[in-house]
Image (cartoon, rainbow, N blue to C red):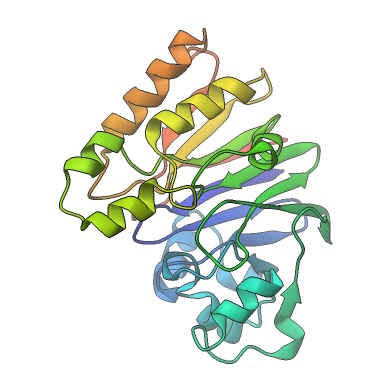
Amino acid sequence: MTKFCPLVSGSSGNSIFIKSEGTNILIDAGVSGKKIQDCLKSIGEDCSQLDAIFITHEHTDHIKAVGILSRRFDIPLYATEGTWGAMEGLIGNIDRKNRKIIYSGEKTQLNDMVLKPFSIPHDAAEPVGYSVFSEGVKMTVATDIGHVDDVVKEAVADSDVLLLESNHDIEMLKRGPYPYSLKQRILGLYGHMANNSAGSLIGEVFSGRMKNIFLGHLSAENNTPDLAYSTVTEILKKSGISAGKDVNITLAQRHCPSGIVTFGI
């Protein structure tokens, strides 16, 4: 059995749990260690059973607990060389044997699971998203994306389950309280993905295989769950894709697990 569950997702913190028959991993751990443990417990899982944490990039909302969890449960951490360099001094001492380097575009085998990191356009040292393969299932985590390029399209395509960034509504961001420099960063080529861009990307790569999509990493100030959902589903409707019929669209929750997608039951 394969299991995919966003534990928390938003500008305040991100973490995704993925389980196969023989492997348990997190992608990111951007809230407190206690919060991660509580979220896992709520879905019947345990931090002590984690085989690895795979890190997308060094921003706090993705790495807050990675050092704590690695030391507490002796968990290996996987990240690019650039991310490791940027994390120095942020996550505390990590045992040498738990410092693992991954490379964008190169697959990493972990027990019965294969992970393929892919480059993402974001203002971090060497950021990646992940496609995870297990028992014939493809699961993809693609957030913190300033613009969609061919690498992102290829990674997202043919995913059975996808967590895709739907960070902000452009007009809401422009009218909002953020300083001009921050607005420009978010809207820039290495910022974050807007609702309409998420809808357009899904419409472009959609296939019958893609049955479960989580919209994640929503901004608390520049978006709402209803607005993200309605914007994306309206764009899909224009492409002849019906939410609820052709694909399940779920809003990844900010502070708690968002529901579990399972395969192979």
